[in-house]
Image 1 (cartoon, rainbow, N blue to C red):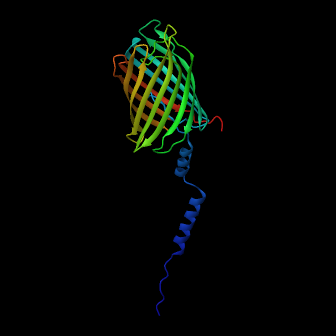
Image 2: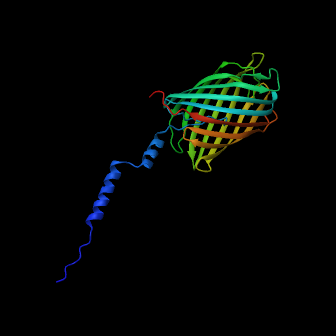
Image 3: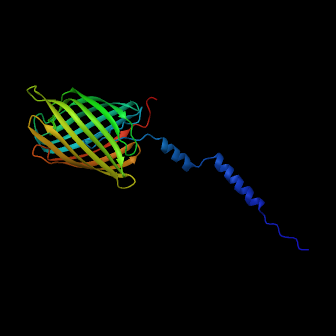
Amino acid sequence: MRVPHKKPWGVPTLLLALTMTVAAQQPSSAKADAASQADEPEANPARPTVSTPATLVPAGYFQFESGFLAAWHSPEFSSQASINEVVKISVSPRIEFLASATPFAHSNLAPANAAGDVSLGMQGVVHHGEGTRPTLAVSYFGRVYSGTAPNLDIGSARNTVILLASADVMGFHYDTNYLFSEIIDDRAIHRAQFGQTLSVSHPIRRQFGLGGEIWHFTQPFLRSHAIGTLWALSYTAKKNLVFDMGFNRGLTNTSTRWEVFAGFTYLLPKKLFR
């Protein structure tokens, strides 16, 4: 009688079980790297647009927004180059503190080299949205130092209250602001200024994004309006580091005719507090 040949299932089965056990006990470096990247904090850039996001930076982290701006043909100067800096930190998911400054500006007017204003502010989230439901926030800025550098077309505000909204719709992200400001001229005359902005952005590749904006501010001392359109390209080098560059075109006679800018947003990866 012929004895059937037994197939050697035992060895492959043993190897397969051993491999699955090792894989379960020792996660792959790829999985570990993915988990590490998921834990990294993510920057929340507000530059270079006039609009500010209603969302805040991650709580407990410092964010720096640094940039260079060159402008031509404004109501107060024919050319100016300046350095701008904004520092933010959120103390909770709903409260953020901000400092904004222009530490250096060079223009064609005397004094040729001067510093701009320094303002301190706070932003609070009123409603956390998700997807098409907008996040709503309110912020306040107060000027603590009045610089001698010439102002752009929208002037220099002593106090500003901003209503902010941000959301995502059909793959596009938008930020819109409504601004109410108090501005003062050289004769210490106070006037109210109103502004509206709308910024829309969309990713065009994995690390690149394109954004466009339309903005409007009243000019009470000139009895006119400043209106402009801004276009910017962004590059996300890392989750906490975003570079940007672009231009702004003034659309009225009292708007700054051209502005060109470049800069970056950097979120410190170390959390300062819980």
